[in-house]
Amino acid sequence: MGKNRIDSIFKSKLAADENLFVPYIMAGDGGLDKLKDRIHFLTDSGVSAIELGIPFSDPVADGPTIQAAGQRALKAGTTLKGVLEVLATFKEERSVPIILMTYVNPIFIYGIEEFTDACVTSGVDGVIIPDLPMEEEDLVRDALQKREIAFIRLAAMTSPEERMKEIASRSEGFLYAVSVMGTTGARKAHSEEVKSYLETLKKHSPVPVLAGFGVSSVEQAHELSASCDGVIVGSKIVDLLHESKDDEVRTLIEGSVKKENVRL
Image (cartoon, rainbow, N blue to C red; front, side):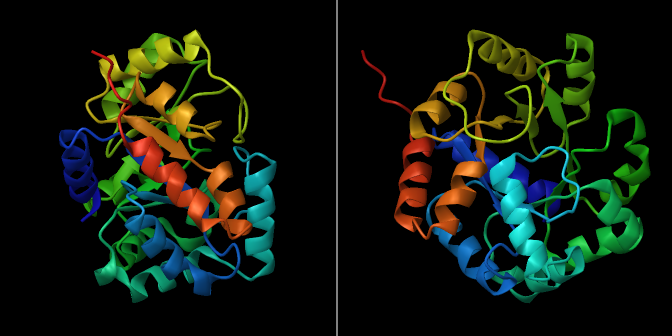
């Protein structure tokens, strides 16, 4: 469970010469009763892990698509406790790691020890906390380590290399490389600067590096995966699932995990 499951699944995907692909979905978007089916559908489509967003009233990292999904989930009565309770009901049926993306406030309200205990009970493998800076992560790090839940760090393009190196050295599970300046959402292209940033993180990171924010097509997934280990796709997946375009979700995942044909 936890870190070990992320490590072993990612290692086997990379050994099979696949790009890693982690979709982001908003828990409770469309109702929590859809969560189990969505996780099974994404697993069957070939994902490496699933990042599960917890709706929050003041999301600092989310663009318009994910904010709208969060509002729909909140209206449906979704809470962190409710998500963990649903995950616990089919813990034994899941074969891919579940990564929770939540902010500090809901964790504090829940209680740090109680939250991490519930993560174990629910079969959560890792946690991303985008509003917790490296200088303050002592607040939760020990509780997560004690239960072998991966504490997944985010790196920003604006950070100096020394800070990137420090964040990379602490990373568990994978390193989340924020590959745009700004919030989540589809972007048309990524620059040479992004590639060089990803290569810098790869050089320092003991765990796989995944590029997230602004990835919305197979072409972009391949372009970024050439400089790291794979991608995280959020807004595009959230949109397609909301519009019931499951076939397009599957096509995006299957196309992204395949390495591009190398011309000899």
